[in-house]
Structure formats: C-alpha cells, structure tokens
Amino acid sequence: MDKDRKEGIRGMANPGRYGIERVAYWLMRITGLGLLFYFIGHIYETSSLLDGKAAWNSMLELTQTTEGHIFLTLVIGMCVFHTGNGIRLMIAQSGFGLGKPRRPDYPYTPSSLNMKNKLCIYVTIGLAALAMMYGLGVMYDV
Amino acid sequence: MTKGGLLPKGFERPTVLASPSDSGVQEKYEEVKSSSKTIVLRISKFNPEKDQRTTFLEFTVPYQRWTTVLDAILEVKNNYDHSIGVRYSCRQATCGSCGMIINGKPKLACFTKISELDSDVVTVEPMNNFPVIRDLAVGFERMISTHKRIKPYIIREDSEISSGTKEFLQTPEDVEKYIQFASCIKCGLCNSACPTMATDSTFIGPQGLAQAYRYIADNRDQGKDERLKIIDERHGIWGCHFAGSCSQVCPKGVDPAMGIQMLRGYLLGYRK
Ligand code: HEM
Ligand code: SF4
Ligand code: FES
Image (cartoon, rainbow over all chains, first blue to last red; front, side, top):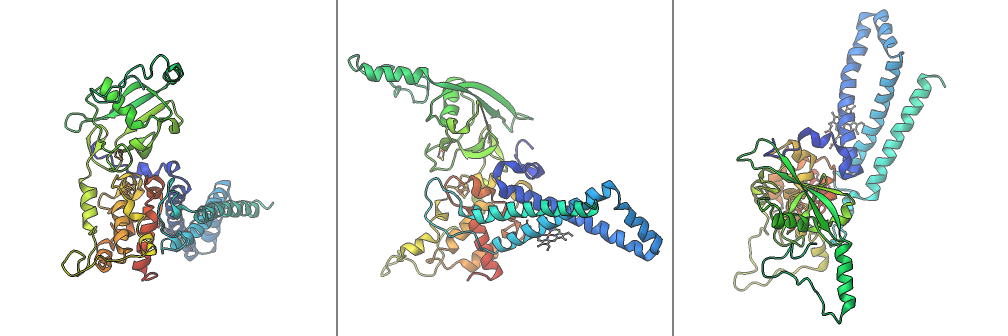
C-alpha cells in the first residue's frame, strides 16, 4: 500500500483539490450510480402494477412521505446534472470546445479547462438546484 | 537561507558580502538575513525494504521569498538528515525528476516557491500512483515503458538523414499544432493527479496519451493508424473521463487532457 502509493477510491472521494472539472467528474460518477440505483428501484416500483391497483397505490404512498420527497428531489437533481454534464462531456470528449493547441507561454493556463467548460458546469449545477427547488415546490404544494 | 546551506563544499558564500566602505550592501544583507521567516517542513520517510508504514520527519527551515521547496529539502538534507531520499537534477523545471506531492498536490519541488504555498507547514510526500523507491523518490519504469509503447518518434518510410534527402520542412503553423505537447518533461505529475490512474494500474495515463497525440499531430509523421490501434482499448484512451486534473497540474503547459480528447476525435471519426 505505502509502497505503491495507489490513490485508489480515496482519490475519487476527494474532489476538491483539482478545480471544478474534478468536482464535475466526481458528481458525474455519483449521479450516474445514483441514477442506476434509482432505475433499478423504479423497475421494481412499476412492476408492482402487475400485482393490482392496491399494490401500486401502496407503493406510491411510499413517495408521499418526507423521506420520499427528499429522495425524489435528489433524483431530480441527479437527472438534471447528469444529463447536462453528460452532454458537455460528449461534446468535449469528441474533441470540440477545447481551444486550439498553441506555443505554451508561462503561466501555462490549460486551454482545455477553459471558461466555456467551467461555465457549463456551473450552469448545470445551477439548473439542477433550480429543478430541485421546483420539484420541492410541486411536492409540497407551495 | 542559513550560511552556506545550499552550496557544495568549497563554494560557500562569504558571510561578509561587501567591503566595509560599501555599508549599504552590508546593511541590506543583514536585513534580508534577519527578516528570514521559517516554516515547518514535514518530509515523508518510507523505505520499502525496511518499513511497514510511512512516517513524517519535521524540521524548522528558514526561507526567503525565492526559496523553493527543493531548496528547503536540500537544506535539511545537507544540515540535519543526510538519509533523506530525493531525486533532482536541473533545479529549473527541465529534467522532470523532482515531482512530488506538496501540501496535497503534485508539483515540481524546484518550481514551487515556499512563499507561494501560503502555509506555515509544508508537507512533502512521494507522488501518488508510482511505486516508492525511498522517501520522496519514486520509480518511473512503468511510465517510461508506456511512453515507449506509444512509439514516441516520427514514423515514416523515408528519412531526412539518408544521403540525397533534405530535412523535412514545416511551417510555423505546422509546428504550432504539436509543439505544446512536445514540452513534456516526463515528470509524471499528470499521472499522479489522474483519477483513472488511481484505480487502474494498467491505464496508459495522460503522459503517454498526450505523447501519442504529439506525434500524430506532427505532419512529418505517418504513424497515426499504428498509434491509434495501440491506444484504442479500455485501459487506453477510453479510460479517460476528462476530469482535467492532468492539465491542472502539468508544470509545462502540455494540457494532456486536450490532446486526449483530440485523439478521441480521430477515433470517433470527427477528425481526419
Ligand atoms: C440523457 C441522459 C443521459 C446522458 C446524456 C448521459 C451521459 C453520460 C455520459 C457522457 C457518461 C460518461 C461520463 C464519463 O465519461 O465519465 C455517463 C456515465 C454514466 N451514466 Fe449516464 N447519461 C444519461 C442518463 C443516465 C441514466 C438514466 C443512468 C442510469 C440508469 C445513467 C448512468 C450512468 C452511469 C452509471 C455512468 C458511469 C459513471 C461514470 O463513469 O462516471 N446515465 N452518462
Ligand atoms: S504532460 Fe506535463 S505533467 Fe505530464 S509528464 Fe509531461 S510535463 Fe509532466
Ligand atoms: S530538478 Fe529538474 S525538474 Fe525539478
């Protein structure tokens, strides 16, 4: 362990050191996994339809609790961030919006970590927060 | 810095810099010397042949505005503990040997001033994702062998050194396309910061991938298909998630993350 100095999952769970792009990377993983769990749960939930109306309604009631509301709010946030950042990544990972290679000059600001990408990340986080607030508003009838 | 601390034997600076008649210079020297502040330097100690766990040694080291982390480590090595294992050579961000984790982030020790760290405690550890040789020195075998794997040289049938041929001409625009990637000094800081490298020990890594782009983008080179074939695998180009940390820490402005996404452009068919 000490010999190989492999950072392992610890490196992933510590996103604050390398700027907003690393935070976005971390959020993308967390939200991807979160959505995967939600997706599996969602299939289980909707499959209760096969057991008739009463089973379906009792399942729906689970989401009408405070915990249920918090959970759904998180799902909304995860959906919006994962989709928004996913679109940014698909564009950037195809080689677009990264700036052009040029002769490096001190202090060497990397052009792939440009304002366009940073703004996209901030806006996506902002949109996720707005969507969560809107969802809370609907669920709590304000 | 304390007297003679950083200079080899025989090269010590005289304590009195100027003749008594030049009192202005003498005063300035005394002023600089007495105004020198100190930090606590914490140095990671670990010898894989003997130790089970890493321990930290602490030293109080004086520093000036221009003192680098490497200067401070060598001050300790020269005056307090000769056993500290550290690798360095050029002291000017050119050889790529002094990469280490400084206060949690991968940096070149010779290119990082104590004053810019803004901290009373400076902790130095060996780079992550590299095997430790001893203390601050890590092994580069794997990085160098992946670097070689991507064929880091111009590939083409003819040659500019065989008789009757001329050198291959390039316009400034042609050079601009790859010169940034050619600045790589193989310091390994990017591999140390990379989150994929942290969990996948067979990943080619930002250093090697950026070099694949360096040669592919060079219009004298004809090895594009060969290299793309080598990197087109799960532990190659597809291991990158564009977390950008490689570019964040690169001390030479290589921007490996850009090179890697450009390479994907080729593989996805968006670039020719
Ligand atoms: C329109 C909707 C979506 C878009 C645009 C999208 C896009 C992406 C992209 C581009 C990645 C790769 C990220 C990277 O390179 O690191 C990714 C990863 C992932 N996505 Fe999605 N995704 C969407 C919806 C979903 C849904 C509904 C689920 C769950 C069922 C999901 C689960 C995951 C998981 C588990 C990962 C792997 C996480 C990682 O490697 O960081 N995604 N997604
Ligand atoms: S790309 Fe930059 S950080 Fe990586 S090895 Fe080369 S010079 Fe060092
Ligand atoms: S000593 Fe050469 S890069 Fe620092």
